[in-house]
Image (cartoon, rainbow, N blue to C red; front, side, top):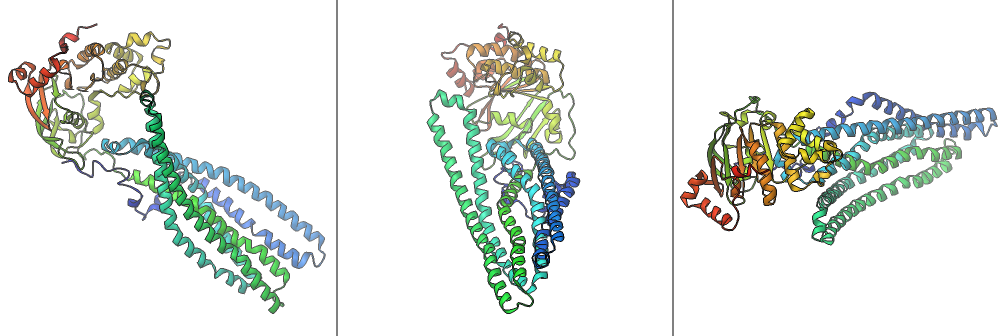
Length: 608
């Protein structure tokens, strides 16, 4: 039975709720390490900006208490000149913070994106069975953008607001410590409101993230299938699906903004309450303690109180960005924490294998499903061609996926040249295996780039030779740009047969010891199939080959044929032996060839 730990864990299984809060800040801080100098510069500029912000109320108090009453014009002008110079300095500090800080954030975002992409490349095959491309793209783009904004603004905002709050409170105490304590006493009210609102906001913003991921997934799926949509005139249906997710996003975002609106309204009210408190308490001090607190002190206090309130308001405004950034980083970590494929500690590289394959009592099940394979055993000698036939869902493709370790086997053993494949490194094993499937995936690019994917760094001569053996060289050379011709997204400019030949050329260039043909020609018409069979016949020569096929005409000359049904091998033998048995294979053969011309693999090999 397949392990749930290895297979089937999805991004949702490893979602935000599973991210360990302990150590999360340390993990986030680790991404600052390569940019320590920029970070220090950013914090230094923030410090200068915070300190210089205290100068205006200090000069204002001296001006009101001393310079203006005593007619000290020279000192007044000097104070204004100093203030102007400070404002120029503050402008330069803001430039440094915004420029260098954002560059640091973007670099951190790029590092996280590279790490996430590298991690996605290392995740097991099963991960992509259960996770939509659009959701993963959202975590790669939207989430990491919010993380980069937090990486830049977070430390500086926290630093500036903390310093300004403490500095402003200290200065207010120099004016009147009693009034300052009254103001300070209302701070706990702000923290209490923030604490109770945080959880509601976090949940709401997390839900909105999931919904934008659903929009991206629907959009990616609809655009990729736009030709099918147009062919069936189902544009309205796709619009309905998109609008459903779009409305869900609006609903989720509305709840997030409702939570945020409640939070800001409460926090804003408490912040503005300070003005009333200062006016009332300050007025009482002016009336009953005029010797120690006069009107000039009250004016200075009212000016300075903004230094105390402004950082708190900045922190409040920063709270939405903080929530977005924290949520984005948690979603990033949720993917990073999904275990990647790992080789066994004693795994070795396989070099130039002969290709002897052996299944010994292999049973396999996908997560939460019944066994797809049940005690399957067979052996394929090097260079032989074995075929697998049977009804859909019987387990044929699963056998093909187990050989390159797309899924790990825990019951039974699969061996290559006598060595269990779980003792072989994934990279070396997969380099020894070539796969040609029904659904050909081609990358956006040129013919040359797609063929060379089979052997990175291949010479032009090797690429041309592979194309010739796949019978696609002449077609490529008929194009104006030859091998540098763009094939379009996923090869949209090519026919089905041309796509298949291109994939075959890729495998020729790879030159594997083991070849898997998984319904390689089932999507092609009979004429194109017959032409492709020539290339496949040449490709199979000298290689251990597994053929999965519905069309029995393509496997008549196989060295041995297995009939797979419900995860078990029901019959095996050559074509002639199985026909003579008059069993399941004979029934399949009769059903296909009662009114269909027989295409023998050996005969089609001579078709030009």
